[in-house]
Amino acid sequence: MDIDLTPKLAKQVYGGDGGSYHAWCPNDLPMLKEGNIGAGKLALTKNGFALPRYSDSAKVAYVLQGSGVAGIVLPEKDEKVVAIKKGDSIALPFGVVTWWYNKEDPELVVLFLGDTKTAHTAGSFTDMYLTGSNGIFTGFSTEFVSRAWDVEESVAKTLVSSQTAKGIVKLDAGFQMPEPKQANRDGMVLNCEEAPLDVDIKGGGRVVVLNTKNLPLVGEVGTGADLVRLNGSAMCSPGFSCDSALQVTYIVRGSGRVQVVGPDGKRILETHLKPGNLFIVPRFCVVSKIADPDGMDWFSIITTPNPKFTNLAGKVSPWKSLSPQVLQASFKVAPEVEKHFSSKRTAEEVFFPPPN
Image (cartoon, rainbow, N blue to C red; front, side, top):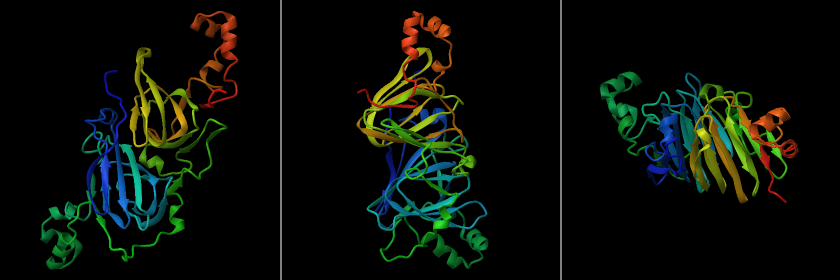
């Protein structure tokens, strides 16, 4: 496999006093285009406001840092204003209009990952802004705007031209934005740091999986997701997605090592991971990670709403199901070697604590 899998950091696309937007470019990370995956990151300073927009791609949003407010308008539905905080995940289907606001934190940072198979550009999100210097209505004539909104042409000009910023603005400290309602989080937001654990291995790690059961809108987005927290020096079992899905991984915290093995048993990636790195594991390739002593957390999307994985080590691996004779013949080893191999990893699954 000749494609470059090296993890990359996002680059700033635009920004100002209110914050900035960053993205990963398919030219720098070719697997984005190859896998039709988009990735971006919104960072808002205090009082920063990301203007209402919709996208050409369905996405999963994950709050990396800070707290704030999001406005979400599903097609033909009322606006839902929700409080968001670190660890929150939000599924954003096609056609949804969103805005984002940082009321009081030094910085609010939101990660966006999604499928771009219907996007204008493979491997990149394209956002369509409702207002601002690049807003959709700047392209219409005043006549069209005034008739569409049923206002005088002078009012149409004022509405379209007053906001001169692009994408992100900084609001006055005293400006009153709509207050969020706790009830609006139901079915819209799942906090991965507080949700029930799907996997919890003592000394190994923990996993929360986003799927259609705990966040139904994931089904409309078409991707599943998970937050993995690997303990210090622990190992994540070698494994692969057994439903042909791609794994798109963003390192949230900590650091560690990763190896990916592709066809013909060739190692196609071996590197050290750090916060902010994004990398993609191709279909059916096997990936494993070992955390540094401070541990490592990552947020991933998988390009299917209810992902399935096969682990190639631990008690749930195929090795534990294969008969001894098959193992002896496959490894070409004596029975005593096979017995020693089969006696290991009989209790652990997915995550393995560091050796004593």
